[in-house]
Length: 332
Image (cartoon, rainbow, N blue to C red; front, side, top):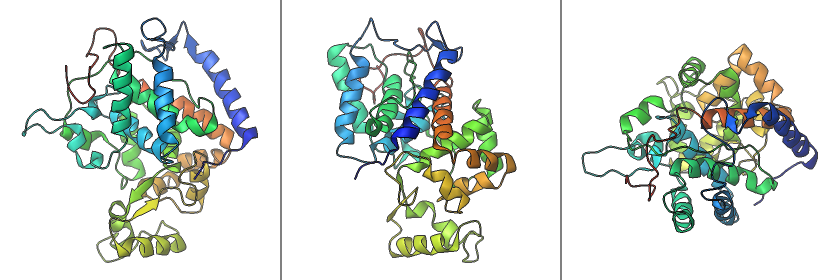
């Protein structure tokens, strides 16, 4: 399967992103952080190309790779900032790391991150952080079908060495979150309403397991009922799919789950958001206004790019903080 694109609006979106970047980039620094574009130009000039090449090779065989790596990036940044802590394995039977938290048990694509790290260690030993690899790989996987970068990724993140399952549970947005909970969580991370609605657009790609939505479909209030905020026809389709086997998968963006586009927002208006958190975006007047604005694909791409750069700079470790791991799943 291939992702569908529209040349005209993609060209316009790319042009608008470039204009925005011209205002945001000053002496290479982004958003007041120590992250910089072309950070590895002198220390590892082939770094970004190595990431891009490996990601694109894998994307040819996995149409969901963009969704997988984007999710890894999200789940990394929302816990302790974008520091690669999501990748760490436990070092003892008693240690519970982020990967072992319930929201992260279904994360995939980590093998691609490790393949990239292996090649980068050959080219430039202990130079490129795992946190930067995660950020670049997510961008490149989403961008691969478009033939152009969908957003800029400033670099210079360092790797953290603390990873706690308890923090993942406390900090990651839940598919069953209501609007107030989402807005509070995003606000706590320094993200605003526009970021919340724009970043939710990541659900335009990918799949989910039926167990994540089973309560919404079959027992919403504990009385064997269905969430009334979901379109009845869509709900019946999901019930048919999920009643056979709770391990079945469903598209997060019906009929468009391999295409990074703005179809997600069109489905929200039709009450076809898969998760309660999706449906909650049209329960608030201000958020619903943004959902309507993002019916324009060019507007969505620009705002998504802006929010991704903002999220990717959350609570990063830079300079002499943290470390540069030799292997992404092991502390040095």
